Amino acid sequence: MPDVLATPAQDDLVVVDKFTGEEIAVLPQLTAEQALDALDIAQTATATAAALSRHRRAAILDGAAMLLRERSESVSQLIVSEAGKTIRQARKEVSRAVNTLLLSAAEARRNAGEVIPFDSFPGDENRLGWYSREPLGLIVAITPYNDALNLVAHKLGPALAGGNAVLLKPSQQTPLTAQLLVDLLYESGLPDNVITVVRGNRQVAQALVRARNVRMVSFTGGFATGQAIAASAGIKKLAMELGGNAPVLVFEDADLELAVKAAVSGSFWAAGQNCIGAQRILVQRSVFPAFLKAFVAATERLVSGNPRLDATDVGPMISAQAAETARTKIQEAVADGATLLTGGVRNGSVLTPAVLTGVPRTCRLWHEEVFAPIVVVEPFDDERSAILAANDSDYALQAGVFTSDLDRALRVAESIDAGGVMINDSSDYRLDSMPFGGSKYGSMGREGVRFAYEEMTQPKVVAISRSSARG
Image 1 (tube, rainbow, N blue to C red):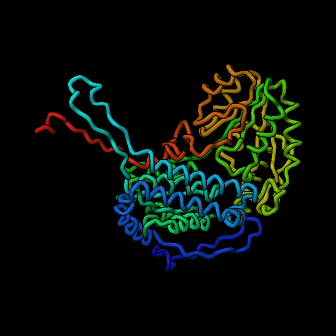
Image 2 (cartoon, rainbow, N blue to C red; image 1 turned 120 degrees about the vertical axis):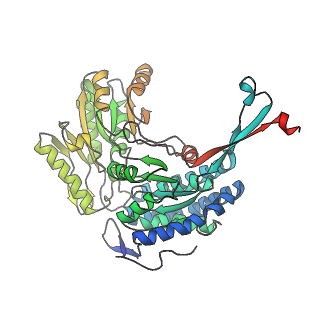
Image 3 (tube, rainbow, N blue to C red; image 1 turned 45 degrees about the horizontal axis):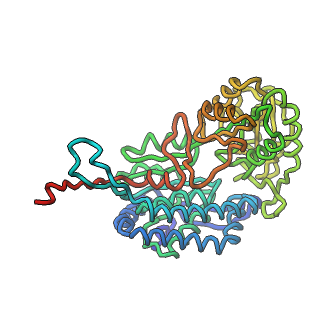
């Protein structure tokens, strides 16, 4: 693949180890003008991508999955260094990315379209036909740092399965992991320029988003950035997976041991840098003291620190600045009357898991996405008040509900306004094949391989009139 980034045009991008702060790579970046030149190169590959047979697309994706599986330990170590995940979490992300690529290969083989029953309407009995799923063309994919491998796979896999060319702009914090996946796809036989990687600042992203020949922008990241993309993109498809502020509801008839274990994991996985991580845990008042005591105790047993150690549960955040910003939000809440029960101590980029209660709903910890190892635990009195509290957010990706009453579980799941409700599990469960995305303001499209594939393709109808065919 020609390296369109060979000549640096602005300050180089310095990539550091998120735990030690040591420099691990220096990479060239592009200016906005050079990024548009790269986009023109990517545009020339749209015909190549579309012409790939479905079995070739699938073989490339399967091949990259196999290479990723073979090199899983070295890739996991890269994720630990570049993204700061613990080694156990990084290994799980690699295994999920393998599955995402395999699912994408399967989609390339099976999701070609459907026969249209024209004779379902009177007068059309002599027509037959079908629709196929055709590529959009050129897709700009903008990915975040928190799942530096698997969320890139969720953009590239479905896009390639659908026959598209992709211009990938990975997070500035984790460009090495994204480039590694692209390299594996080329090693598996992807033709030149079908994926082009661009590294650059916000102006680069804005130029790419505005470009007229881009048919779709697929973005995962923050709400404010998503809003800016939507305002400037013009007439093109948008798919956005934006912020979360997930509630978890624990009713008095729940299995408390299960609820505590799942909620601790859901709150602090990936140092809380998880858009579907539990942020607000709402517990029925009759069991609130017992739950809170057990939850705090389980939180305090978590090991924070060096992500390379198998024993570590909570590694560093993406930067010391991010950790300090999160600590400031804790201090704000405490100043407004909240009680910090444990955690919230910063050492460089590591923030120990923090549990607060009595948090006013005016605080940022309640109404914003925190994206840190911080959780709010509050009591509720009845089902109605729990649902009102759960829905008290502009962000609505997923929620969790713990109860042994099936009727209640279904009732509450129906009443919570979110893209997904996990019953007797934390909010952070995700299967890579399921539809994934938010509800409420700002939600656009769905990820999950099949659903992203359909977002990244368009139907084309062919109809045949049998009477005219007979001449």
